[in-house]
Image (cartoon, rainbow over all chains, first blue to last red; front, side):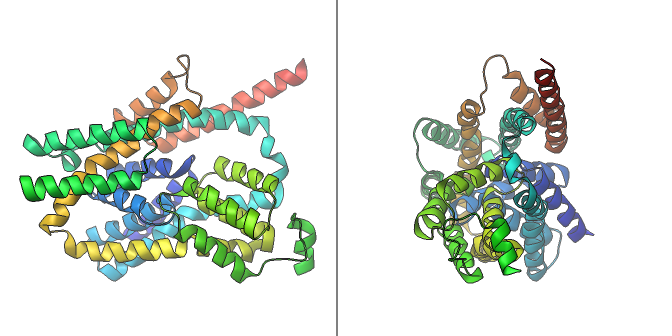
Length: 191
Length: 200
């Protein structure tokens, strides 16, 4: 039953997302693309791009879109795809919201707890590795092209965006739009 | 019930101005709808709306909620909405804030998702996305190096993220196991350190 598996998968993803939208993307990538195989890494890259240039939290956007695509890819209708999108977006926030409610009710005083602080500083180190792994896993022929000109264009775009976003504070939205323009020109007009 | 909530959870300056659910919904609606690029991009807008304009919470409380929302699992913006909504109007307040925060983004994504299915085989569309895909990978990879600084990575502990990435990439171990083990180890270590401090 794919709907139940979708629910449980995103429940798990939500419960273990520590450290922002990229951490959520890393977990979704690992569970949905690597483990379940519901999406190709090409579809996932398109989803992440779309999630970053539309309004709203990136984690929610990615969950919504992934839920839709997973159900439609499994051969169900678009209406059931929308049901899948809602299941994914709601289950990804379910555990955190319950935890937040408990914390808001009882634990706000203990926010400076040294044990939690120690665990968090360790987690922060690990999350960096997690996101690095997600980036590595997304380098596939699906996203970069098999060989020939597309591979070289992809490597150039990757290098340019990597350097610019590392060195300058350029908005990811602008970089995604510019890469889209470059892609449109290179593959649509030149090649 | 209302008075009970006021006494217990409403830590704000102007107690008489208890926000309506509708106002909470609209504030988070604005925050969710007008920020592109995710949770942390919402912080300035949230501060402007909740602290400066509505004056529902003071700056210190805002910083506390921020810290807790970052430390807890989940989508950061939704955690913020849950906590602020709960403080102001209890459980129903948190629901209003959450729904306000994510409703429009979900609708927009659904519109795009259904439209893109028809565009998938379009040549221009495919050309544009061929350019975007490697950029997406770069936009996930580059923050790793910026985050490394804020996470406090030095030469002596840089093996931790490298081993974590290797376990996931090379051995296919689930990130969830790695997070679980790290959490457990961090809590045990923190506990041990606390006990030693008390012993001295």
